[in-house]
Image (cartoon, rainbow, N blue to C red):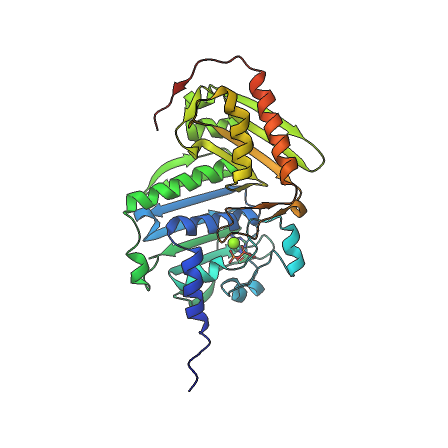
Length: 339
Ligand code: ADP
Ligand code: MG
């Protein structure tokens, strides 16, 4: 007798959810990225109990058309790419069409959406991967997702969650990174009814840095920018007197995406090396734009890493840009921020 069976869709989605959605912050990341991809310029995230019992994400983006509703929660359904070739020049944050099917497999989802062309909105309920209802409803243009009771049908996964306070902390950190990565979008983050973050969305990066990191860092920023035909760099770096014992303040965004890259970190740290003590790391908030054909974002499950076709060129440009910004300024002896 054959021992091998092909798994049913719901089981496949639960397995996939294990890879993509490991905690409430991952839900928030995926849904906010969808809102950004939908062209929203105002995004509100509201959570209760660290996002475990309740996450609501509201955007004023494109909305979802009625014809697309049956496809939204299917695995590998996406409006962002059509062929494998499109993977070579992804300009959106999402492209795998996995997030919504994964989230719907392990929670109770309510989706309310309306496009500017349609007269009425839609409300769709799906739980544990099974559609519950679809109805017409009056609502503003844009999309709201409510995710209730994450992992309610996968108790083993739920056990691995940390306390609501810790999970809320992860979401707070994520919201800060998202806000800095998109200064042109107004973000609001509400935790248990309290507004924790609210950015203006007026494209002023320094305002957001002040909002997120506070006065000490904002008072010590240096503007840095440069570009060539392929790459542009724009953002702020802090004077070396602002340093930390870890890399948490070494932030950079590639085409609006928060990533980790040993190449970029190395370029930054080499440029700072003459000015900063060993095992201390600088504050940076750099927006790097690279032609989409020159990067591969499809190399990491959470898209946290990226591959560069022109790594050496990027390294050199970054290193020299930061170095000359630092050399242009008067150096002051180091004081150390608390961790
Ligand atoms: P991906 O982002 O990789 O395309 P998702 O599963 O996250 O996959 O989303 C599936 C599709 O649902 C998206 O391609 C998009 O067309 C639609 N969608 C999801 N969220 C939104 C939103 N907030 N506004 C408009 N459309 C959305
Ligand atoms: Mg997505």
